[in-house]
Length: 376
Image (cartoon, rainbow, N blue to C red; front, side, top):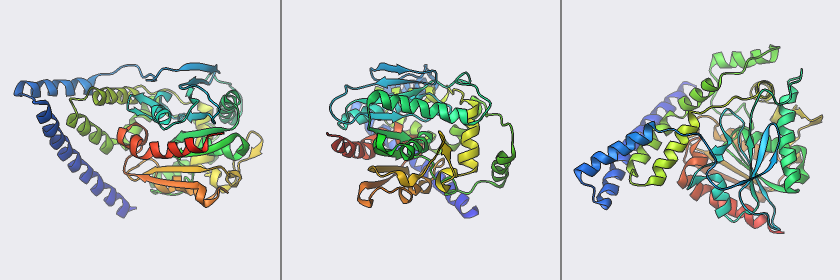
């Protein structure tokens, strides 16, 4: 653990150095191309500061239509349905708004799916609330979430392409294992599947997760606390994003995307208590998904039941979900090896879905492959 901690510290230091060089090299080149005067440079500084402090309510960027409403989620349609297999983008239910999947123009996974040739692109927009379906059992939380996914897929018509990120990745894998006939392709990015792999947990956190199994009641963390934890884990990438914005301060799209992301980060929303307890108990502490012990909707979740084409994306600088946690899925499914695509990208966790270059270089080719498989 000490060796890994030292390695992470050195890597973070290199990231900061690279960010500083990139920021000023990029700005000097970009400002020269614009013929920026000393007064113009001062204006650029003011624009940078405006983007740093500006906030607005998080919202989806591209036009859409609400096709289904439930207490727990809305199904949003972004592109027309054709004869091809429709696509359902699953946002993570982890304490922030679902609109991160459509953050800003050029920084949108939904937009990337459409430009890659996918039709019938939809996104499940979670509307988390403790008023969902109160019940005395902790299983109610996960059952409500699965029911929302099931209803969305029923509305679209089976099968569908499932595209997932972070905490929606294990949900997509779990759903596909329970209903393999309803999923045409499965794409999982930066999602924990095997929670035992990757960076070892600190001793105190290991003890805390063991205590979960014995606890009869658990309070969920505050929304603000979850947001702070995400920022802490992402701080080197945050510096990198600031550097990138300064290097391209003449681009309104870059500053708009930065404001959209910071607004999203600063507007946390609650995770339903029962759902939080369930994930902490059965996944983070019990690691039941890969152990074959997970039961959902009255049936066992067997990852070996997955046979559809599988696309896995991981970030080499992801401090939240190490690559091994994601790639473990490939070893547990029954998908033929030639139908499994693994892609490791030089990025952190959030950059996997909000960085324009990652969306263009990594996501677009994969989603083009999904589109090619979706013709009927």
